[in-house]
Amino acid sequence: MKSVCTVNKLMKTLVLAVLGAGLAFGFGPGQAQTAHHTLTIVITNTLPAIGQVKVAVFNSESTFLKSPYIKKQTQVGPDGNTILNFENLPAGDYAVSVIHDRDSDGKLDRNFIGKPREPFGFSNNVQVKFAPPAFEKAKFTMDQKDQTIVIDLNS
Image (cartoon, rainbow, N blue to C red; front, side, top):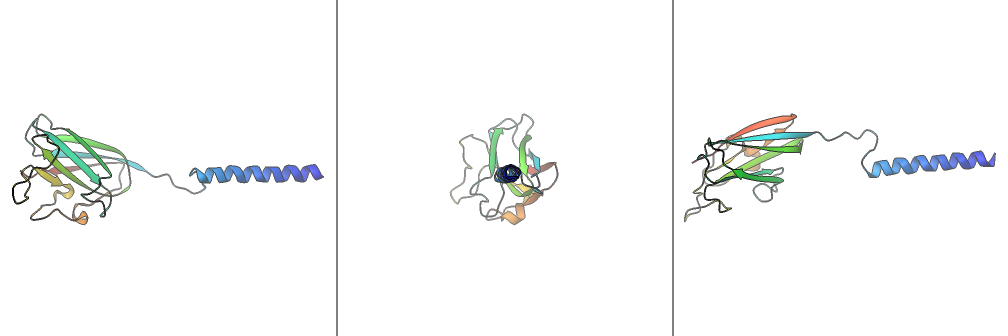
């Protein structure tokens, strides 16, 4: 009888240890898997095959235009359009900024009063007058498996 109780206690301890380890590694009961999506960004209105396109994806208002969630750069396409894919993005709200770095110097060139001299754009094709847009204006929601946005750069 004593050995049956010891085996039962040992089995309970083993089951609790396995469940605890599963919870620690994120395999707990009822835990939903986070869906990951592909964002395709089509950038239009660039000079064909000149310079680079720099794209930054932001996932919060507090980091918008300061610290991108993810960023990429590539050469401008030969036809003036450039396509970039960002894979494995979790569902949520995002905003995108794009710079056409025509001289490939790694920065957005500005004139003496601070106005950009190179084309740029934002998600939702937000028009900029005197200051960059707020996150809320450029924000879109990733809620589909694959999503495409088009950003038309100003000249």
